[in-house]
Image (cartoon, rainbow, N blue to C red; front, side):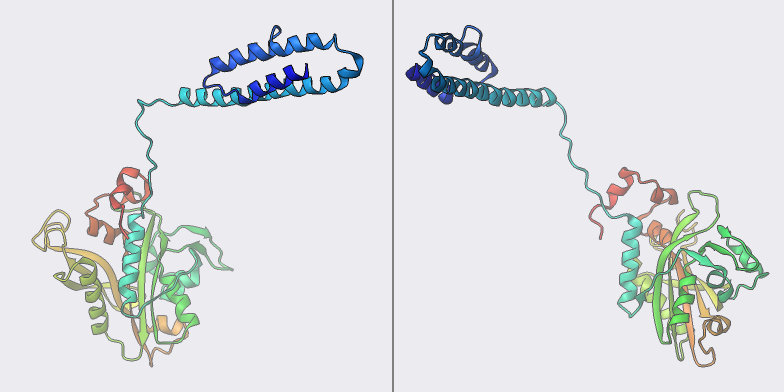
Length: 342
Protein backbone atom coordinates (compact mmCIF):
# COMPACT_ATOMS: atom_id res chain seq x y z
CA UNK A 1 0.00 0.00 0.00
CA UNK A 2 2.89 2.34 0.67
CA UNK A 3 3.92 2.09 -2.98
CA UNK A 4 0.36 2.95 -4.12
CA UNK A 5 0.25 5.95 -1.78
CA UNK A 6 3.65 7.21 -3.01
CA UNK A 7 2.66 6.82 -6.66
CA UNK A 8 -0.67 8.59 -6.11
CA UNK A 9 1.03 11.38 -4.19
CA UNK A 10 3.45 11.95 -7.08
CA UNK A 11 0.53 12.21 -9.52
CA UNK A 12 -1.24 14.76 -7.32
CA UNK A 13 1.84 16.95 -6.85
CA UNK A 14 2.56 16.92 -10.59
CA UNK A 15 -1.01 17.76 -11.59
CA UNK A 16 -1.55 21.32 -12.96
CA UNK A 17 -5.07 22.06 -14.26
CA UNK A 18 -5.54 24.63 -17.00
CA UNK A 19 -9.24 25.27 -16.39
CA UNK A 20 -12.02 24.63 -13.90
CA UNK A 21 -13.28 21.60 -15.84
CA UNK A 22 -9.98 19.76 -15.39
CA UNK A 23 -9.97 20.71 -11.71
CA UNK A 24 -13.44 19.22 -11.23
CA UNK A 25 -12.31 16.00 -12.93
CA UNK A 26 -9.35 15.91 -10.53
CA UNK A 27 -11.69 16.25 -7.54
CA UNK A 28 -13.88 13.37 -8.70
CA UNK A 29 -10.93 11.14 -9.57
CA UNK A 30 -9.04 11.58 -6.31
CA UNK A 31 -11.42 12.92 -3.65
CA UNK A 32 -14.84 11.68 -4.78
CA UNK A 33 -16.78 8.97 -2.93
CA UNK A 34 -15.65 6.50 -5.55
CA UNK A 35 -12.26 8.10 -6.02
CA UNK A 36 -8.85 6.49 -5.79
CA UNK A 37 -8.04 7.87 -2.33
CA UNK A 38 -11.34 6.54 -1.00
CA UNK A 39 -10.41 3.11 -2.41
CA UNK A 40 -7.18 3.19 -0.42
CA UNK A 41 -9.08 3.98 2.77
CA UNK A 42 -11.27 0.92 2.04
CA UNK A 43 -8.16 -1.26 1.66
CA UNK A 44 -6.73 0.23 4.86
CA UNK A 45 -9.22 -1.82 6.91
CA UNK A 46 -7.55 -5.03 5.73
CA UNK A 47 -4.05 -4.06 6.88
CA UNK A 48 -2.37 -5.80 9.79
CA UNK A 49 -2.76 -3.79 13.02
CA UNK A 50 0.99 -3.11 13.34
CA UNK A 51 1.05 -1.39 9.90
CA UNK A 52 -2.01 0.80 10.36
CA UNK A 53 -0.38 3.63 12.34
CA UNK A 54 2.33 4.44 9.82
CA UNK A 55 0.10 3.84 6.81
CA UNK A 56 -2.69 5.94 8.31
CA UNK A 57 -0.36 8.95 8.58
CA UNK A 58 0.64 8.54 4.92
CA UNK A 59 -3.00 8.24 3.82
CA UNK A 60 -3.99 11.42 5.69
CA UNK A 61 -1.06 13.33 4.15
CA UNK A 62 -2.13 12.11 0.71
CA UNK A 63 -5.69 13.29 1.21
CA UNK A 64 -4.50 16.67 2.57
CA UNK A 65 -2.22 17.17 -0.43
CA UNK A 66 -5.08 16.49 -2.82
CA UNK A 67 -7.40 18.87 -0.93
CA UNK A 68 -4.75 21.60 -0.86
CA UNK A 69 -4.21 21.26 -4.62
CA UNK A 70 -7.98 21.51 -5.18
CA UNK A 71 -8.37 24.59 -2.93
CA UNK A 72 -5.37 26.36 -4.45
CA UNK A 73 -6.57 26.21 -8.04
CA UNK A 74 -10.23 26.60 -7.14
CA UNK A 75 -9.52 30.08 -5.63
CA UNK A 76 -7.40 30.99 -8.63
CA UNK A 77 -10.07 30.04 -11.19
CA UNK A 78 -12.84 31.81 -9.23
CA UNK A 79 -10.79 35.03 -9.07
CA UNK A 80 -10.11 34.93 -12.81
CA UNK A 81 -13.78 34.29 -13.59
CA UNK A 82 -14.86 37.21 -11.41
CA UNK A 83 -12.38 39.56 -13.06
CA UNK A 84 -13.59 38.54 -16.53
CA UNK A 85 -17.20 39.06 -15.52
CA UNK A 86 -16.39 42.53 -14.13
CA UNK A 87 -14.43 43.61 -17.21
CA UNK A 88 -16.39 44.94 -20.12
CA UNK A 89 -13.91 45.48 -22.93
CA UNK A 90 -16.47 47.50 -24.87
CA UNK A 91 -16.46 50.20 -22.18
CA UNK A 92 -14.28 53.29 -22.81
CA UNK A 93 -11.12 53.55 -20.76
CA UNK A 94 -11.51 55.46 -17.48
CA UNK A 95 -8.52 57.78 -17.61
CA UNK A 96 -7.45 59.44 -14.39
CA UNK A 97 -8.35 63.13 -14.52
CA UNK A 98 -5.44 65.26 -13.38
CA UNK A 99 -6.07 68.51 -11.60
CA UNK A 100 -4.62 71.89 -12.51
CA UNK A 101 -3.90 75.12 -10.75
CA UNK A 102 -6.90 77.36 -10.19
CA UNK A 103 -6.74 80.49 -12.39
CA UNK A 104 -6.88 82.71 -9.29
CA UNK A 105 -3.88 80.89 -7.85
CA UNK A 106 -2.05 81.23 -11.15
CA UNK A 107 -2.67 84.98 -11.22
CA UNK A 108 -1.85 85.43 -7.52
CA UNK A 109 1.50 83.75 -8.02
CA UNK A 110 2.26 85.88 -11.07
CA UNK A 111 1.41 89.13 -9.28
CA UNK A 112 3.65 88.13 -6.37
CA UNK A 113 6.44 87.25 -8.79
CA UNK A 114 6.25 90.64 -10.55
CA UNK A 115 6.46 92.68 -7.35
CA UNK A 116 9.10 90.43 -5.78
CA UNK A 117 11.40 91.35 -8.68
CA UNK A 118 11.43 94.97 -7.45
CA UNK A 119 11.94 94.20 -3.78
CA UNK A 120 8.44 93.65 -2.36
CA UNK A 121 8.08 90.90 0.26
CA UNK A 122 4.88 88.98 0.99
CA UNK A 123 2.99 89.36 4.27
CA UNK A 124 -0.29 87.75 5.31
CA UNK A 125 -2.67 88.19 8.24
CA UNK A 126 -5.90 86.89 9.84
CA UNK A 127 -9.20 86.89 7.97
CA UNK A 128 -11.15 87.69 11.16
CA UNK A 129 -10.25 91.18 12.32
CA UNK A 130 -11.06 93.68 15.04
CA UNK A 131 -12.39 97.16 14.35
CA UNK A 132 -9.03 98.85 14.90
CA UNK A 133 -7.11 96.98 12.22
CA UNK A 134 -9.97 96.81 9.73
CA UNK A 135 -11.30 100.36 10.11
CA UNK A 136 -10.14 102.77 12.81
CA UNK A 137 -6.39 102.66 12.18
CA UNK A 138 -7.10 103.28 8.49
CA UNK A 139 -8.78 106.62 9.13
CA UNK A 140 -12.33 105.26 9.50
CA UNK A 141 -13.70 107.00 12.66
CA UNK A 142 -16.77 105.29 14.21
CA UNK A 143 -19.26 107.62 12.50
CA UNK A 144 -17.28 108.12 9.31
CA UNK A 145 -19.55 107.79 6.21
CA UNK A 146 -16.79 105.86 4.41
CA UNK A 147 -17.68 102.83 6.54
CA UNK A 148 -20.85 102.59 4.48
CA UNK A 149 -18.70 102.04 1.37
CA UNK A 150 -18.05 98.47 2.50
CA UNK A 151 -20.89 96.09 3.45
CA UNK A 152 -19.33 94.15 6.30
CA UNK A 153 -19.96 90.67 7.69
CA UNK A 154 -19.92 91.34 11.43
CA UNK A 155 -19.23 88.43 13.76
CA UNK A 156 -19.65 90.38 16.97
CA UNK A 157 -20.74 93.96 17.58
CA UNK A 158 -19.82 95.32 20.98
CA UNK A 159 -19.50 98.89 22.19
CA UNK A 160 -17.18 97.80 24.99
CA UNK A 161 -14.85 95.31 23.29
CA UNK A 162 -15.09 96.67 19.76
CA UNK A 163 -16.55 95.02 16.66
CA UNK A 164 -15.20 91.76 15.26
CA UNK A 165 -15.76 91.12 11.54
CA UNK A 166 -14.54 89.27 8.49
CA UNK A 167 -11.96 91.59 6.97
CA UNK A 168 -13.25 93.71 4.10
CA UNK A 169 -9.78 94.34 2.64
CA UNK A 170 -6.20 93.23 3.21
CA UNK A 171 -5.36 96.77 4.35
CA UNK A 172 -5.68 95.34 7.85
CA UNK A 173 -2.43 93.46 7.18
CA UNK A 174 -0.81 96.75 6.19
CA UNK A 175 -1.69 98.09 9.64
CA UNK A 176 -0.13 95.06 11.32
CA UNK A 177 2.99 95.43 9.17
CA UNK A 178 3.39 99.10 10.12
CA UNK A 179 2.74 98.41 13.81
CA UNK A 180 5.40 95.71 13.99
CA UNK A 181 8.10 96.97 11.61
CA UNK A 182 10.13 100.12 11.21
CA UNK A 183 10.56 101.81 7.83
CA UNK A 184 11.68 101.22 5.18
CA UNK A 185 8.73 98.91 4.46
CA UNK A 186 8.12 97.41 1.02
CA UNK A 187 5.52 94.62 1.04
CA UNK A 188 2.48 93.18 -0.70
CA UNK A 189 -0.48 91.59 1.04
CA UNK A 190 -2.39 88.89 -0.88
CA UNK A 191 -5.46 87.31 0.68
CA UNK A 192 -9.15 86.54 0.72
CA UNK A 193 -11.64 89.22 1.77
CA UNK A 194 -15.38 89.32 2.42
CA UNK A 195 -18.15 91.83 1.73
CA UNK A 196 -21.90 91.45 2.05
CA UNK A 197 -22.77 91.90 -1.62
CA UNK A 198 -25.23 90.21 -3.95
CA UNK A 199 -23.58 87.56 -6.10
CA UNK A 200 -23.64 88.24 -9.82
CA UNK A 201 -21.46 87.96 -12.91
CA UNK A 202 -19.48 91.01 -11.74
CA UNK A 203 -19.62 90.75 -7.92
CA UNK A 204 -19.25 88.17 -5.16
CA UNK A 205 -19.33 88.10 -1.37
CA UNK A 206 -15.88 86.46 -1.36
CA UNK A 207 -13.01 87.70 -3.47
CA UNK A 208 -9.24 88.02 -3.42
CA UNK A 209 -7.00 91.06 -3.20
CA UNK A 210 -3.35 91.96 -3.46
CA UNK A 211 -2.46 95.23 -1.74
CA UNK A 212 0.93 96.87 -1.66
CA UNK A 213 2.71 99.29 0.67
CA UNK A 214 5.97 101.21 0.40
CA UNK A 215 7.12 103.52 3.20
CA UNK A 216 10.45 105.31 3.39
CA UNK A 217 11.88 108.80 3.39
CA UNK A 218 11.05 110.99 0.39
CA UNK A 219 8.62 108.55 -1.28
CA UNK A 220 6.59 110.45 -3.87
CA UNK A 221 3.57 110.00 -6.11
CA UNK A 222 6.00 109.64 -9.01
CA UNK A 223 7.40 106.50 -7.32
CA UNK A 224 3.88 105.12 -7.10
CA UNK A 225 3.20 105.82 -10.78
CA UNK A 226 6.41 104.18 -11.98
CA UNK A 227 5.83 101.11 -9.80
CA UNK A 228 2.33 100.61 -11.18
CA UNK A 229 3.45 101.25 -14.76
CA UNK A 230 6.10 98.54 -14.35
CA UNK A 231 3.45 96.15 -13.01
CA UNK A 232 1.02 96.87 -15.87
CA UNK A 233 3.64 96.27 -18.54
CA UNK A 234 4.86 93.06 -16.91
CA UNK A 235 1.31 91.71 -16.49
CA UNK A 236 -0.39 92.83 -19.71
CA UNK A 237 2.45 93.46 -22.14
CA UNK A 238 5.04 96.09 -23.00
CA UNK A 239 2.56 98.15 -25.07
CA UNK A 240 0.19 98.66 -22.11
CA UNK A 241 -0.52 102.25 -21.09
CA UNK A 242 -1.91 103.48 -17.77
CA UNK A 243 -3.85 106.51 -16.63
CA UNK A 244 -4.57 107.76 -13.10
CA UNK A 245 -7.88 109.41 -12.26
CA UNK A 246 -8.51 111.33 -9.00
CA UNK A 247 -10.54 109.35 -6.47
CA UNK A 248 -11.16 109.04 -2.73
CA UNK A 249 -10.09 106.49 -0.12
CA UNK A 250 -10.05 107.24 3.62
CA UNK A 251 -6.53 105.87 4.10
CA UNK A 252 -4.74 107.63 1.19
CA UNK A 253 -4.41 111.28 0.21
CA UNK A 254 -4.21 112.06 -2.65
CA UNK A 255 -5.97 109.00 -4.04
CA UNK A 256 -6.45 107.69 -7.56
CA UNK A 257 -8.00 104.93 -9.64
CA UNK A 258 -5.71 103.35 -12.20
CA UNK A 259 -6.89 102.27 -15.64
CA UNK A 260 -4.96 100.29 -18.24
CA UNK A 261 -5.39 100.35 -21.98
CA UNK A 262 -7.74 97.50 -22.84
CA UNK A 263 -5.73 94.37 -23.60
CA UNK A 264 -8.66 92.87 -25.54
CA UNK A 265 -9.04 95.57 -28.17
CA UNK A 266 -5.71 97.34 -27.80
CA UNK A 267 -7.45 100.56 -26.73
CA UNK A 268 -9.71 100.80 -29.76
CA UNK A 269 -12.92 100.10 -27.81
CA UNK A 270 -14.91 96.91 -27.15
CA UNK A 271 -17.65 95.62 -24.86
CA UNK A 272 -15.08 94.69 -22.19
CA UNK A 273 -13.88 98.29 -21.83
CA UNK A 274 -17.34 99.68 -22.62
CA UNK A 275 -15.90 101.15 -25.81
CA UNK A 276 -13.69 103.60 -23.89
CA UNK A 277 -10.38 101.84 -24.54
CA UNK A 278 -9.63 101.80 -20.80
CA UNK A 279 -10.28 99.29 -17.98
CA UNK A 280 -10.02 100.08 -14.27
CA UNK A 281 -7.87 97.56 -12.39
CA UNK A 282 -6.86 99.09 -9.02
CA UNK A 283 -7.00 101.93 -6.52
CA UNK A 284 -3.96 103.67 -5.09
CA UNK A 285 -2.63 106.78 -3.37
CA UNK A 286 -0.19 108.28 -0.90
CA UNK A 287 -0.63 106.92 2.63
CA UNK A 288 -2.56 109.42 4.75
CA UNK A 289 -0.36 110.91 7.52
CA UNK A 290 -3.04 110.00 10.08
CA UNK A 291 -2.63 106.30 9.16
CA UNK A 292 1.15 106.52 9.65
CA UNK A 293 0.70 108.18 13.04
CA UNK A 294 -1.95 105.63 14.10
CA UNK A 295 0.56 102.85 13.41
CA UNK A 296 3.45 104.47 15.27
CA UNK A 297 5.34 105.87 12.24
CA UNK A 298 6.41 109.51 12.26
CA UNK A 299 4.49 111.10 9.38
CA UNK A 300 6.86 114.09 9.41
CA UNK A 301 9.85 111.90 8.67
CA UNK A 302 8.32 109.27 6.40
CA UNK A 303 5.95 109.13 3.46
CA UNK A 304 4.61 106.19 1.50
CA UNK A 305 2.20 104.91 -1.07
CA UNK A 306 -0.33 102.06 -1.10
CA UNK A 307 -2.34 100.28 -3.78
CA UNK A 308 -4.85 97.47 -3.97
CA UNK A 309 -6.24 95.31 -6.75
CA UNK A 310 -8.77 92.49 -7.07
CA UNK A 311 -7.22 89.27 -8.33
CA UNK A 312 -10.53 88.29 -9.95
CA UNK A 313 -10.57 91.49 -12.01
CA UNK A 314 -6.99 90.94 -13.20
CA UNK A 315 -7.72 87.29 -14.05
CA UNK A 316 -10.86 88.14 -15.99
CA UNK A 317 -8.95 90.68 -18.07
CA UNK A 318 -6.00 88.37 -18.62
CA UNK A 319 -8.06 85.38 -19.79
CA UNK A 320 -11.17 87.07 -21.18
CA UNK A 321 -13.50 85.57 -18.52
CA UNK A 322 -16.90 87.25 -18.40
CA UNK A 323 -18.54 85.73 -15.31
CA UNK A 324 -16.95 86.03 -11.86
CA UNK A 325 -19.01 83.13 -10.51
CA UNK A 326 -17.03 80.64 -12.59
CA UNK A 327 -14.12 81.01 -10.18
CA UNK A 328 -16.16 79.49 -7.34
CA UNK A 329 -18.19 76.73 -9.05
CA UNK A 330 -15.40 74.12 -9.42
CA UNK A 331 -16.64 73.18 -12.89
CA UNK A 332 -14.01 70.84 -14.32
CA UNK A 333 -14.81 71.99 -17.85
CA UNK A 334 -13.80 75.52 -16.86
CA UNK A 335 -10.76 74.55 -14.79
CA UNK A 336 -9.33 72.24 -17.47
CA UNK A 337 -8.67 75.29 -19.65
CA UNK A 338 -5.84 76.26 -17.29
CA UNK A 339 -3.92 72.97 -17.39
CA UNK A 340 -0.24 73.67 -17.69
CA UNK A 341 -0.52 77.18 -16.23
CA UNK A 342 2.17 77.98 -13.67
